[in-house]
Length: 451
Ligand code: SF4
Ligand code: SF4
Image 1 (cartoon, rainbow, N blue to C red):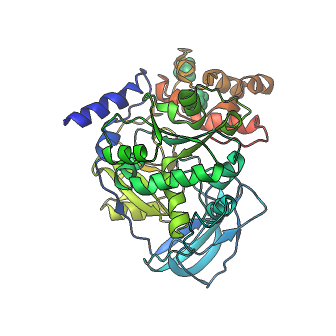
Image 2: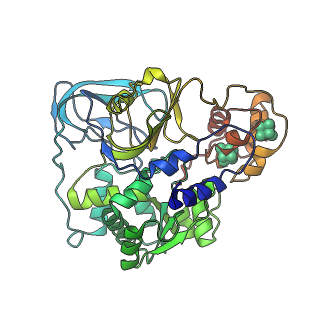
Image 3: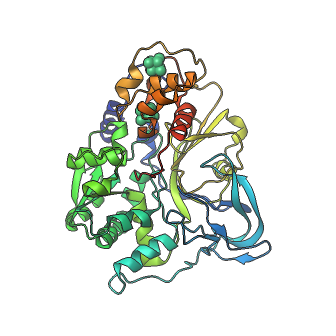
């Protein structure tokens, strides 16, 4: 193993030191960082969900039989602050506007099916000169081009920028990329550092933040080109300890600035805006090149193929990604979209990739299954020990199981950041995710939190 690989492995393994629970191959990330991005061509038929962010779906503004261009808007709802337009990933023809399983909710939601005509990419919007437009015009461009947080949370970026404008002293760039199966952020930091840093500077200008901090788990000298550019631009680098959950925006603010973000507040309320590093890349492309957010980087992993960094257009069925890699979804018992710790298990490979998906991971039947031998809680307390937001996952499940809603409310499941650590450490292999999701929805408060 090369020295750099060893350094990375030691660092990544430190964050998973708990015993029990399910197995994750930590070599996935280490090896995938070195894999150059490959672009997956669009499928003959693209399935584009009109909701790819928190908030509601926009209204379709195209109809069956209509010709659409790459980058053309398919939906709009200017009245909902948390809705952003979705754009066509190809030149083609609208085959159908229908309800189809949405990867975020798992429920049927509005989706536009497009027959692909060609793979051409001609930016739909005019490039903007940041020196000749106002900050509000740039924020509006971020909305119009459909940019949402690329770390997996898909909170609309323009809404965060608006909230932070002239209110925060710090812009923190989240380059931590905690998920053990994902290396696409790190790869883009190697391949496109100039564009990424340009997006960071543009966001800092939009909100008027004096201090910009680039928070990364990399060590000095690991990404020399990026480090040189950050130094040139006067952007501070904060080297973050490698614990998995620290990559969550609220915890990152505490780690970097030493400020707690109260549960009912946002990072902007304590003077900081957190944006993902891939989001910064998308912002630069939207302003400078007129490119809407249509594609993104993600990391694919299977034992047979290894870790692959791919550039994939939204609406591409998962099966097309398999086909591109010479793989077959039929070989795999479990396919997870997103993070291996927090992602969605899918059974239908025609489900499309959307703006939220930073990874795909495929397991065969013989590979370890996290919840196969699920038994009863033995009250070991591991889940409480690892929970980064100090709630009691085992008690939340118990309160829910016995239907004690007052107790459930007091246990505050809404604070859960969906990190998956409780399931990871549980020796009884309890699948917390659906239970926590239900507990959160039963006790939800109205305010939608930024992360
Ligand atoms: S759910 Fe029970 S068995 Fe599982 S980690 Fe928590 S306390 Fe231990
Ligand atoms: S998934 Fe939620 S409850 Fe479980 S450890 Fe993470 S924050 Fe705590």
